[in-house]
Every structure is written in structure tokens, then in C-alpha cells.
Length: 163
Image (cartoon, rainbow, N blue to C red; front, side, top):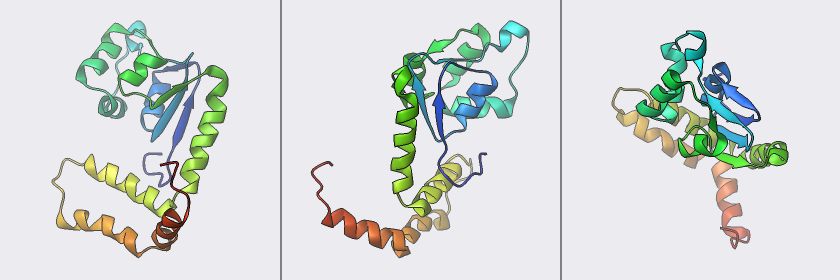
């Protein structure tokens, strides 16, 4: 799933705990309903979270938040999860499916090659090795694509009052 080249959008309703939280953390975008709850209450059953399961959550939050989730076992509501960086946006419970679909359609309307490159860039930025000259050159490849030529023309032709 981490190597999937297309954007992954998670829609979260209800409990997003333990393994569910781990899955949500590897999504590219997360939208949650107001009734969603988040946490890693593994302390309640005497389990630890493996390093590879902790890392995506840690990258979204910070040491203190991750530690609190693991040792306290408290569940957070959607607003707190958003303020801690676990999710992108909170919507009404009945609006979640509609918002997730509209988000997916907005993403789909964009250039797929650019989305793939951005996912690759995020993966590369997570690599502890310093960026190399070829890494810096990669983003220029977009200028050579059909997607760029079409998008560039349509951007300057369409009404931009919505920007």
C-alpha cells in the first residue's frame, strides 16, 4: 500500500484505533466524520506497537503525541486528531461519504503523473540520506509532459475568479 502510485484517501467513521490508525496513517489524505475516535489503546491489552507500525503515525504527529497515545490509551475526538496532524479535515457524520467522493474527484481531475511524482517526492523526503542533484532535477520532468501543456493552457484560458 505504501508503494501505491496513486493518491490514497481515507474516509474515517467511528473508531480508528490500533491497526485502523496505522492504516489511516499511511493514507495520503484523511477525512473524518465528527463522530470518529482515534488512538492506540494497546496498553489496555498489554501489547506494544511495532516500530514499523509506529513510524507512519509518528511522522504525522510528534514524539509527545505518539507516546501519550501509547501509554495513556485515551481516545481523541476528530477535532483533536486534526489539531495533532492525524487527519486533514473533519466533516459532519452524514457528509463523510460525499466529501470523500468529492475529494477523490478533485484529485482525479488533476494530472496523474504529477500526483505520482509528488508521492515519490514525499517518499524521498522521508529518506534520511541527503538529496542528490538528480533528485532536484526530477521535478523539471513535468514540463515535458502532455499533462503540463494541457493544464497550463486551460489555466490561462478558464475563468480564474475562483482562485
